[in-house]
Length: 377
Image 1: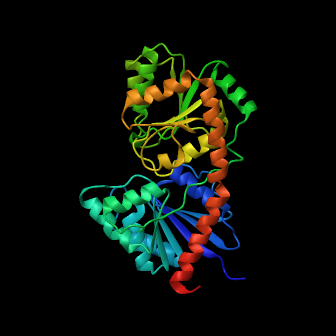
Image 2 (image 1 turned 30 degrees about the horizontal axis):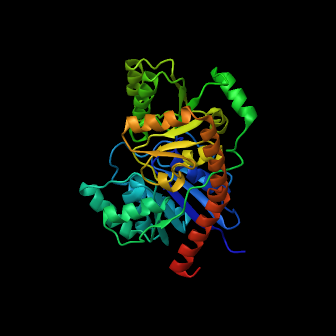
């Protein structure tokens, strides 16, 4: 039997976030007879996210703050010592140092992945153009995002391949017992419409727009409760959000639940899932909400239209438009049958398109083809 293909993923930090959790899910499920996984982290490991360290090696570089000119050499040393076959870098935070390190180590295959947020102007745009071209392969988590990346950074069409994120549809599924238990824990009555979101409290997730929209709903006298699941150890805007909640006198209507290890349980308590992000690639939390059987209201940005079918599994709304956001929430608040209809369609769509096993097999096939094409292995 041939030795497993050694695949190293390079990320900036390890904390509860969609991109990082998706990489961990991939590493945990890859066939150990065919692949050996490595997760290399530039910065601090805040949470291992249940990475199976029996299958994959976790390597924390703990780089210095700011620019670290010897970082590519550190990456090269790791790649050489483990005899890595494929380096898979992820997003801007690992692009330059990762690809330079791989070239220094003469790693056979370099794949760069983009997940949603990228630089569209200035020097960083030029750097992306150069280093994306320098990678052997480029991956995007959304077809819409792939075409946008190519057009904005001025790369030839089809420079990026696409593999959609996957979701564990057994873990994320409708569960009446969880719904009842979590709503009891939160003190939510059976007839209260609970609107929820899951995500880090950082600028790109745009929680303040959710608060603005809630203000419109309250002014109309509509009954609802809103919860925000998630936090962030860095770049958090939670203080700003709390000030806005006080300003609009929404303290009784909006509650922070912080980071939770039982997101699949908590989602079952929701009646409506919302995501007001400024930018998304292929949103894991949208996929999880749909697998849970929830109607989804999300911004019409990035890969969101590839996941949410407007007026079938939920609504898309104009980014930064609090009135449009509030209007979409009001339509579902006042129509329980529409919520159920959208929720059923969401679950069916998730089962059909977002299987975690399908995603893992797609990555495995991609890695094998990339390496075979490079060195005939």
